[in-house]
Amino acid sequence: MASSISQSIPGLGGLTSYQKFVREEGIGSISGLGVQDLKSVPLKPWPRRGGEGVYIDLDGTILQGEATIGQTNNAYICEILPGKNLIAQRQIFEELIFVLSGRGATTVWTKEGKKQTFEWQEGSLFSPPLNAWYQHFNGSGSKAARFLAVTNMPLIVNLFHNYDFIFNNEFIFTDRYGGEDDYFSGKGQAYPGRVWDTNFVADVYNFKLIEWKERGAGGATILFEIANNTMCAHISEFPAGTYKKAHRHGPGAHVIILSGHGYSLLWLEGGKKEKFDWQAGSVLVPPDRWFHQHFNTGKEPARYLALRWGSRKFSTAPEEEKLAKSVTLGGDQIEYQDEDEEIYALFKSECAKSGVQVNWPPNV
Image (cartoon, rainbow, N blue to C red; front, side, top):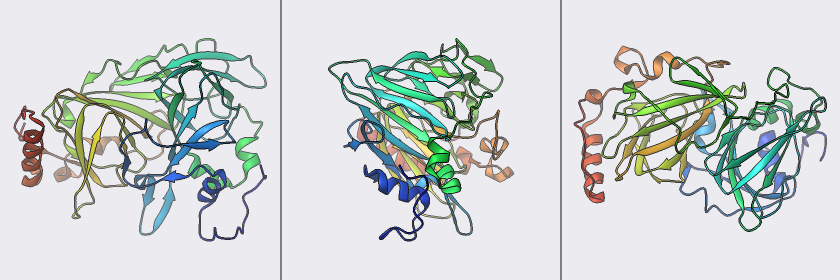
């Protein structure tokens, strides 16, 4: 791998350093508002990783201003063939990994510490410590293992545009990982505000949530602080025949549907509403400062995992106090009584098509 990204490559004029890197990788990239089924997305051989993969660069990862400022994060899907392993690597960008299917193990180490290995399965969530060596292994000899990773690679590549610095850097972030024996044990620490600080979640499908009335719909949630990253995660769940209040925030929140069936509406204030239908295995990223609202028209609770910016421990852009505050009071949430009438009408219509009862009035 070259030490720096070429300043002049035929046919690549005007692309960012990250976009050039993706082109050079040769596995392709998916764009748009979302992806319908992460488990069935076609992949290509990925020589650098030793498996198969594809990049996911959705519209909602871009930070918008008076002019486009740039892409803040990305995602990729990677698959480990049966009985195989990926190539060991390290990098100075953060990475949140969610296992889509299969089972396996990951070994982590630094040049000054011993190797540690932990096992994972479908539904596991973890993050390789920043710039530590790590290697993924498929635990099955007959089935592939597939995972989705959300990273802040675009920021890092665009900022430094030097491969050696990013992928071959000797610096050890001891404040992130010191080789602790129980680092990947799954033990965590609860904090006020529905926060769970951990380095490994064994099963996001069944993790116990805490009631959170502020977003409506009788929902529950849990917020994850992971591996001392600036990126973090949360799980939310809401009952059948309900929908959550519309809200907006910054870019890059990858919303992965874990269960349920429904749709989301997404719109820039004063603009046209875009409808994205989803089911288990879908992912969407609401664009920067677009209102978005999630609707459960299925017959079971809808649960999703969001991999995103917004760590409370290492905040980069505080906005927490506005997320559940009404827009009429200067916040970023639209209360049920203030939403457009067409929203509830569409929801009733969609529930009727699915044979699902609307379980609560919109003014609750």
